[in-house]
Length: 99
Image 1 (cartoon, rainbow, N blue to C red):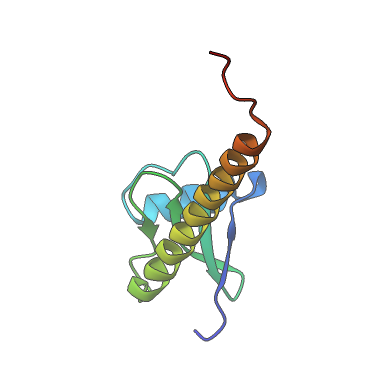
Image 2: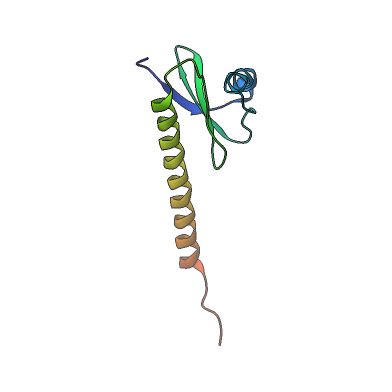
């Protein structure tokens, strides 16, 4: 495997997620899910926020799961950064409380 694609799962990925979960003896992940693919095959999936990753037990996927976890962490940092920006902008436009 040299080309790995990491992306958000789409509605059309439900059957592939169910297949992957069955291979891993797990329930399919719900909510926002990141998936990793190689050669148009889903190798691993990670629910964003909480839950354990699922992966194809017949493929070497430890590094693929680590890549999904890294991307999930990047997305979490971006969300936190946006919240921080919104708070800073709001504080600029707040009027001081009257005494």
